Image (cartoon, rainbow, N blue to C red; front, side, top):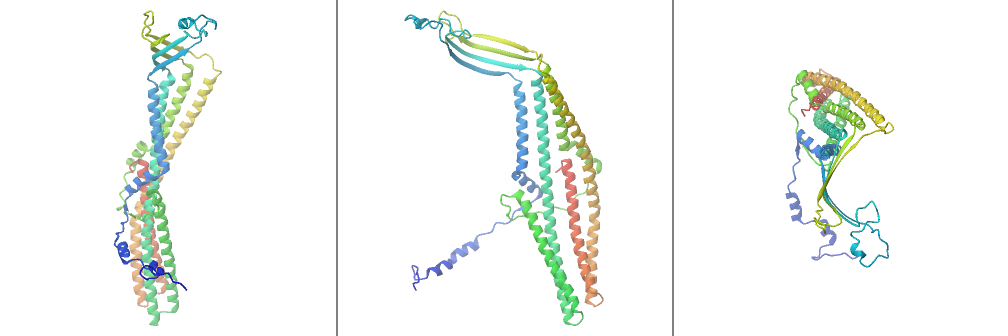
Length: 452
């Protein structure tokens, strides 16, 4: 059997399985990059850069703003420098004399619609059209830009609501992991205590079985809590990082702020709500569409002014000294007479859309009132329960301490200890849910009023 040997007589397999010590040392010496800490404000900023629907809403808003600029530019006169050469066959036969080519420039053109055999046009043209439709188009574009801006604000606040929900939800999931780990540690210590008491013949084997069952349940709860925390962090990381597997940490917010008065929040919601702005701008745009449709009954005035050359020679003066430079002006007034009721039907269409926009506005107002009452009531109740939840946790912790002391002294049963452990865990989980509930309700109010 042949064994391959390296340069210095060492088997190749051994060379491959033993990396140089210097390389391992270098790898160990490379400092690991610390996980970035993400605040709520930074999470919102990152999500705005990565969310495609928000980027689409921003693009629509920019396009609508540019449409408004284009509509205003359409009201202004357009200036064009027009240049043209036109050749037309002369009105003489093919048997014309040899000097016919010299006189071709002065002969009549074969096409009577043209002015000469050789015609040069070099003019500056100024064109302007004045009408109600053109003026209304500017106001319509302005209203459309307002709608797009409000829709962009709606998309922005929707993204903020999503980020806030995921951010606080991930923080709550992390805190629940801590609660689950504490409960597991408590159950493990109680199992050890019960085993010691059984060995000392102070407790029955059934107590140890009950404690072991409680510990096993806490192990499953801790695993589930960790899984939920990882899922929440991944869902948030999709909005924050190019790679959702990026390791990061969240900065836990300070204590929840106090709830403002109902009147202040209601005034801010009525003044800064983007859905209400969008509905009002849509109604304004629909009303302008009706005005534009009615303008079909009115005439438009067209103004055209030309200055330059339109002559058989491309020159300022002709062969006989005639000055070719000149100007011409045209005023056109087109009066609509008959269009087979097209304008009438178009007006009815726009009136129907205006009525739909009016209904949408009233529905938005009602929905805003209902959302405000719902969010404010939710925040009020959640805020009032925070103190009670803290008190329940302290009471449950003290109850567990007392029951364990009684169990150690042989004055309590294992069922009472397990029940006290479950009560403490449930109280801590309920407190985390209560904090999340209040933070979410408060964030919804802030989003509704535009303060976040």
